[in-house]
Length: 312
Length: 225
Image (cartoon, rainbow over all chains, first blue to last red; front, side, top):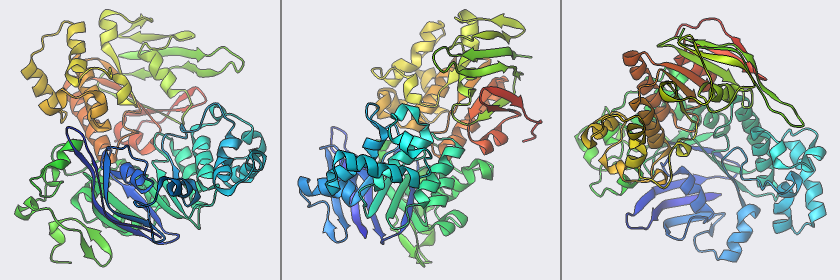
């Protein structure tokens, strides 16, 4: 189980930026959660905070625990064991994170050398069934190939195979479909469907993809969690005005969102005046929105909006 | 017809001898949005780059207002066809602040520009004084794409090639960019070539669509949006 309690991340500089503000998530074993939101809302920073891969000027507060183990207190040696061994990370970019100078089979099997004490040869051989599992046909030939011979979708599936190679319990995927076409998005969704036993936390800005991979959806806006619930509920009956606008802005729904203005700049989250972060763009705002709303829980569907204060 | 391509072809030499675009014949009228829809690697961006004058065709011709145009585009021809890229960060000089990046076209085309008018124009795109002295790395993807669009529109081109302009952005920013483009088109009659692998987006925003498969462009039946 992965448990995040009141996690905040602030980047310290001349102009401090609060990238994640008070996020709490409880991911049970085998759960599948998608985090959606716009660029700069803090989704990717949250994943990097879990693995403690943020730059030194990032201050993480709150608590992050995997199966009861406090990740923020773990020493660097222990974190090396956790990264890839217990929690793996699939980065964004159509698999651009693969090393262009190494054969794909070696890279897919590399976590086994690091975490399961395999030899290079054993790890390479173990990569072949992993590639097959993710529907990369001619897997033996592909294991001996270099990344540039793969399409974006194939590279991203190889990244998924690498992510689960060492048998982690938790898989974090950061925008695994960004920039991919529909066919390749489907391939990545199918690959993630094959991860059945692991806990999946996937960040994406593609709502259709979030719907297909996540059983739960968490919506982030301006560093805060603004909605959380069952994916069918969040997409079918969104509560927060931002989530509703996201659904309305989808081309499938006619791109008819009801919003004023544009997204705030990253550094405007540090505004200490308080209030709902969505206030300036929200057409349903009221007097109460000048005070930051808490996360209201309506039968398991959580929403950060004063409109639901009486339903809590 | 504002723009036409006649059997436009791009072949790459080398061991594979790939034909990225094969005898593409597409047309575009003023005020029209034409979609190029296909998978990654099908050749749609190659055609877009040839039309924008960034890539030399192997054979075939491009006509603008009935006159054949050839690379390198110069003068008014260069100004009339512009391109908006998928990755807005690649459109800007990373070492310059936004204000310096934004004023480049004004100096290239000797257009009158004042600080107040620039601020006024940018406010239509959700960009304000606070953004002007930041470098591209300090702006979000949505802010950069809106800035790239604002910069293109300052020189009032006749044709804009939109190469996956929103595929890296969230749905609200995507809708904002597409709405800004639509508003501008309604006022100025600019023609757009929208390159996308999002079928629904093409159907919603395009008057006509060309399907692209392995470098072959086929026009689909007329769409009513």
